[in-house]
Amino acid sequence: MISTSDFKNGYNILVDGEPYQITWFQNHKPGKGGAVMRVKLKHLKKGGTIERTFKSGEKFEALSVSRRKKQFLYKEGINYNFMDVNTYEQMTVSPGLLGEMAKFLKENLEVEAVYLENELIGIDLPIIIEMTIAEAEAGIKGDSVSNLTKMAKLETGADIRVPLFIKEGDKIKVDTRTGEYVERA
Image (tube, rainbow, N blue to C red; front, side):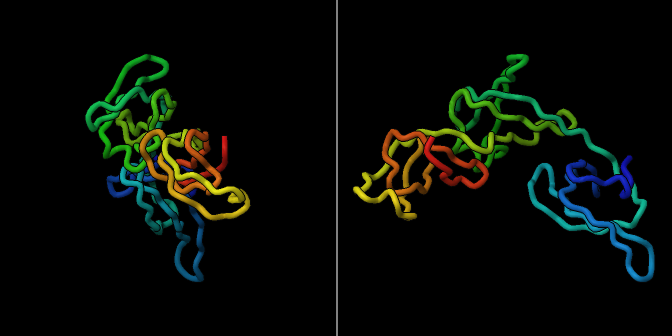
């Protein structure tokens, strides 16, 4: 059990039967009455964030969240197949668990599988990954000093906005959190 006085960013707790991670907290002592703890919580399964206030001394059940390295192997139908890099055990993941990140999965990419009490709740991609441009409109000479962008298609089929000087076959770095171009690789 974790008390409100033990809160730290990154702690995982059970609130109203739902798993949350503490992302921010503040101890608040109003003029009258007891101290309270203001907290921002991120839902571990759904991803949404809520703000709650708890009385000082309230207790919560601590949750065990673990991460295991996996390697993306291939897509079969609508499902995605991963292999544990330590045990070589394979597993199939539905697209609902991956969400928008699925468009950045390419073969042999190492990811982290997130487990809550031994139940898979998500896959975390590396923040920056290298991708190859599969299709892009031709740039015009002199376009290298502007901040204008154009649409391009990555090797995985994802569409992304890139600077005008990027051409087909170029390797670029992509931020998987935002889906934005970072720089040339």
